[in-house]
Amino acid sequence: MDIVKIAERHKKGGLNMQTVTVSYKSVPQYIPWEVLTTQENTAPFKLRGFAASPGIVEGPCTIIRNLEDLHTIQDGTILVCEIPSPTLAPYMRFLRGLVAGHGGPNCIASGYAREHEIPAIVGVGGVMGFIHDGDVIRIDGTRGTVEEIR
Image (cartoon, rainbow, N blue to C red; front, side):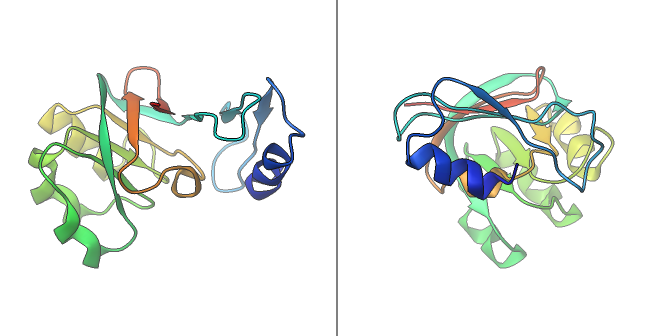
């Protein structure tokens, strides 16, 4: 089921207290991608990806949509990006955590996160559609989950 269709059904009240499994073409089929919803339209979300670097952290996030946005990274934020790049290496020491839409346990971002000992989750398909700049999120790098904190 497409994430856009899930979000539309959720807004209309068609999804109540259920788990929806979403399949992505860019990753293997055996990964249990979950979008957990509740009865409220403004319900917190929970996403799953690859656990890349262990640890649990929560705080505000900064969205990076392209490399020109790197100057917006603030000290102590959780970085959320679609595709991690080696260009992020100098900024890793300022981050509390990392969430990436693409990648796997052995990608460059995973290695940088383990090197700097920050929690990281990669391969979180659709993450850019659920998280907005400044949202307070909790990431669990051991379990590979990202959730919104209200």
